[in-house]
Length: 243
Image (cartoon, rainbow, N blue to C red; front, side, top):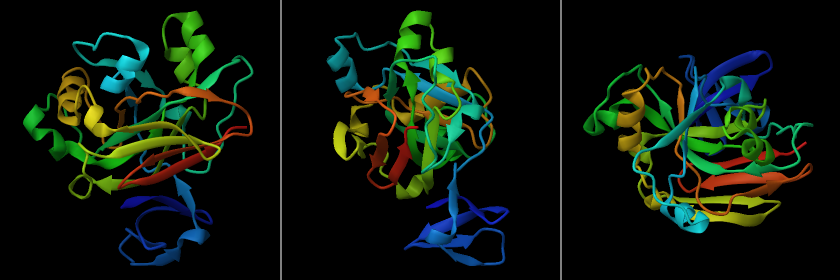
């Protein structure tokens, strides 16, 4: 698996294995993980999110399964990395977590077929679609509620396509150590190739763009002082404190 890291004033991509990060800069330099700050693993031009994309979440809400993906955007300015703080906005009284699997685009692309979808994906990571739920209900649309700075934790690392069992990966969300979401990517309504074909038919996808694939059942509230973790088997744990 690989990611973006910071050492002193130096920012670089590197390969992570057994607590050691090896720089991709060609010098083969290695670092202890404890020496580094883990940054968001990509630099997206946009974050495309999918709403209501788990069968068990639709059942939980008593909602009809959508006939096509429901998509919306989060700005790249909302993105933070592993261990960064989620800032609770003063304008909201209800902020929720939404643990998700995210695909990272590896090639600029448009109009990609279902069969070619994995050719344009660099890999997968964890994502938290933090949402000001009261503002979402009040506005009737989702831009404000999803777009606050720090509302898109992503990471910690990217696992390449060939190293991740995307169709059968357990996904959990914990708040202060308590499991709140517990599902599997096998419950996705629209799978990854379908989403790539659908979204790339609408907009050009740039290298580093993030597609957050939807959240399973168990979405709930966060409060200042909480520590929220998104864990996907085969990727790792994305952890953030709420401030």
